[in-house]
Length: 390
Image 1 (tube, rainbow, N blue to C red):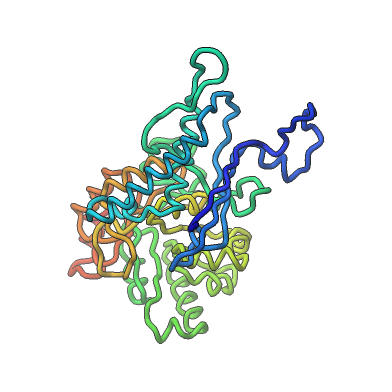
Image 2 (image 1 turned 60 degrees about the vertical axis):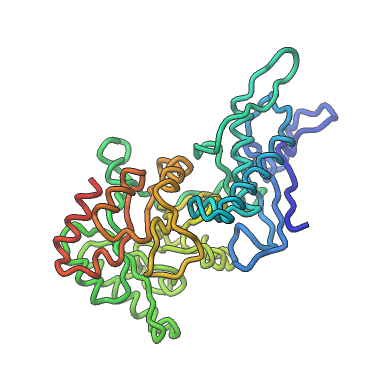
């Protein structure tokens, strides 16, 4: 057996002895609103929270409904259907990156969402309790599961909340939230950080360190982050650091970056050594990459400042193990990511036309590389990109 799912759903205080569950342990009480299943796999070639032999808890909102007949059959059928969709997409070469990436964990997340929606919409048919309703492919964050890193704890507090400029323009309650820029340039040197900070319309930049001579030297990495942070602070631009969260946290409080961006493998390492709590304690913002349905469950569980999806289009700027997502996945992610979390699109977004396309599909911000680093007139290019996001 490659993978096992231990089905949950009943609260830990449900007993057959007639007690009302009034004297229950705090850790049990903290999880009464959730239905949790345990997933365990033999592992894979990657080191992500959503696969491998570590085992994870898949958590949904719990509906206290009597109309739950057929949950087990529906869950197993939905898992099989999702696995078949993934297999067919890979075999035929059709379908989005997320569809082609469906493996056991992804299938379980989709199936959990399907069953949760069915329980939420279940009704009585005749006498007694009714069956689970059959709905459609998961299409709302209300039913989509997260990964519980500790099954006896409630969901963690959110990271520094941000909001898109579009949402800020229509919501009076968003005034206390920080507005994420419409574009997020990703560069690797202080020279480019300086250029972007001096460019009108830039509010956020991300430093992705790629030079092997720097990445092999912790001191050099820390120095580059410190210099970039100083430049950004001087120009009132928010600096995001890709992956090097330890080095970022080692800087003085007045020279720390605004936020950290983590890919799924680096996110796992950060979780394993207690880094998530350290980032929260330092009050840094957090952005997380996603490429698959399982990765989305992991990212959503941490309640980050933003969630990114990629690659939207084929890209040459970074080696990735996922096919292009296309705007179809953008639309699906917009449904599955809560409206209170900005969605960032990345990968192959190299001109204003593609920016418009992904914006219309639902992204709140576009992360760009070549669209700013390979142009003759940076000011004009940035202006065109921002206008395309309006």
